Image (cartoon, rainbow, N blue to C red; front, side, top):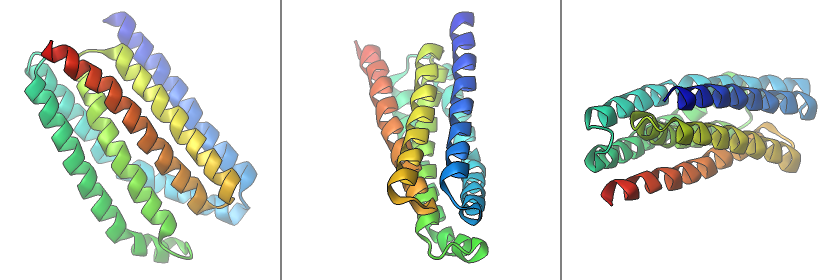
Length: 196
């Protein structure tokens, strides 16, 4: 278990360094005014993702209490993650016009992409909680790295292709959604092994 925990800690550090790469790319590829908006929306993303961290902890505790092998606890965690993600998406879309007005975005599209990214992050948090609750720190570490790499790659691709904040945030959302799909596959393997 200590080895898995150390690996998860190390990969968390790598994930944080990768995230810094997105800020660096934005600084290089966006005009200063646009970069300010980009950083502000990344900060909104960070704050809006706090409930996902709580969800991860709740899911992990529920899976642990179920003995770490409970298929029902895992299924409930997935349902909870999807419900929470849907709620975050609706709240984010409703808040988009407020962010547009407050940050002078020139339209709500960038803020809607923030909401989509936060919703995908929320699903991902439930899946991370399943791995954490099962004390499968190797899988948790893999999910963290895939998340960070896909998020950064998507954001940089959006910057390169569209050259603006909306493109970057659309790319971030697409990257997080892709990493959630990979995490889903990784956790589905856990679910299948539980049923065997």
